[in-house]
Image 1 (tube, rainbow, N blue to C red):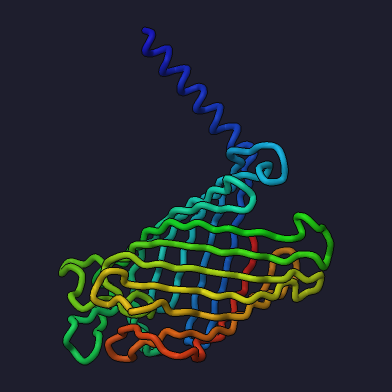
Image 2: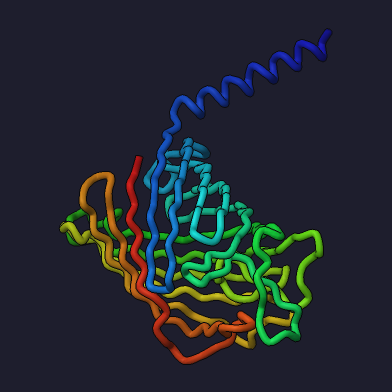
Length: 287
């Protein structure tokens, strides 16, 4: 009888906690269209649930929260489903964990293959359309700061942000992972294993329609500890400009240069001097 009472008490407490969290939670969604000169066309539909968590007193802790994110991305060559949990334990930090799963196919009109495999000896990678599943697990930490939090004003907002992520990417099929490697959604040849990504952003907010300009540096160390590992990191350098049309609609434009070179046939990645990568445009509508 005592066990039953304890069980009921635990259930009531858990229900009260969940009800309190969801009562103060906010829900948001968005639809994003991504175009680039790569060429690239992609549509993403996102859904976010934000709930207060570990909140305290003062500007560093009063906004602490947990965000649960779901994202569906569809391009002419692939479909990817992602889920992430992002904890803000203090205003200047985010801790995130998440994962993705997807598959790809061929799109002859653009001459692009969403899934490719390479046996390690052939002169070119070959299509593996709809024959396997791509998966990715990730964990990351972001540090961020906006000077407007200290000096409020229209011209005092300088954004500093750095993000670091370790992820494991893999490919599963009935035949197993290809010996030479695989490629998902034109991202370069990979083997199952760990990868690192770093991101550094220095931005400035403006009181105009073009409300943000920024410089972004991304660093990549793919295929850690396998046969495809590069001797050094590769870099993407981009300029960001965001145009805010209204409260719901904005356009982000990013021209990028890169030190990564991808072989057109085998899809192996290598280093090069900085060269043009793409111009990307992302049109986002908040629901």
